[in-house]
Image (cartoon, rainbow, N blue to C red; front, top):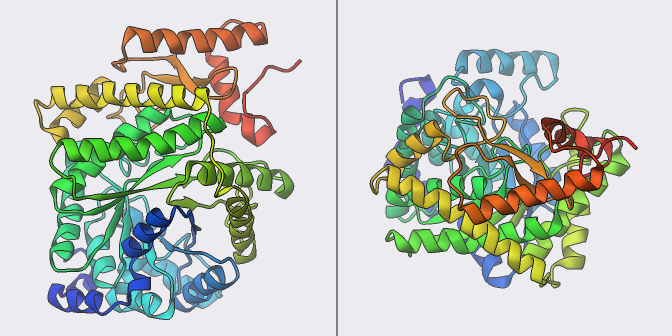
Length: 463
């Protein structure tokens, strides 16, 4: 609370009183729970600018013109690294130049009163989205400021984001965040928590992101969190993506019940494609539409929307709204349809089996303590996040696409899958190699990383 002067403005009892007076339509978990009951998919953008009046103008536009059901507050990069002095300079420069000199909203610097200006000005519920390994002060200010949803976790906001921060540190710091969430919950102030699903956003096998999401859900539930949204980043193969979202809901429910947290309400979020985007707007809309189709057919509780400016920089408010309107049109067309094929059922069995292999091994390593088990699992590569910058991540597992574009393991590293599952991955990679008339190689992985930005899903060699 002493990391920055605005921490002094946090008063828990006064914050509880503010939350209790919020109308129901401004409470994130209420809207999510109702959408889940009704089978609807809610639409949420990303957005953040440094100054309060500009932020209100931007979010009002996305709410009214973009028809956003849920609103974000994306935090700037300085705040994510707890560099509040630099954020203060960015605010001053933004005022001076009349341009956004930060890439998000510096909530810590604006403090409780600044956050409440946003909450009071808008009709939709607001969520903090960031990427902060140590988010304790940001959480205190955001919650006291009236935010009713908060993204992140000790694994998902460390391994994909930081190089030199230990898991022991971030898991403890995020236990603080989750316990604070539990304290608000116990005071009658429900706050939704959302582990960050896409991780590095680059060829992440579904069972890896599912394992992280479920571990972070268990860690949150242990501290009293009662409303959790588990997320998944679109990979590109329709059947695998729909299967992944559906099985994520059931697996999260299963593990929470198994370990005594059956009263936690779980919802799902699909993140549209997090990798490289085509520069042309027309092609970008195709990628956005594909993600929207996944969200609709999987009946995700919400979808996080990309913009047609994704490849070229920070989007205009108009481009952001256009991405949401495109998404809503697709959801309206597909929301009452379902995908029910043998391949979908097979993929759900595969993903569930893979996730259980990893999660159960994490519990074994920790001798029943999932926090300790996770630290050992990531250190040893039992849980391995591809292309992560963290030196604490093993980085031995390599993913690649199979011949139909689903994410498989090119090299399993130390992932503890059964021999049957490992054989399946090997066969899928060899099937693609045979089709492309080349040997399985690391070049496949490289080709797949850039494929969508070049107009394909699978990174085929040039003919």
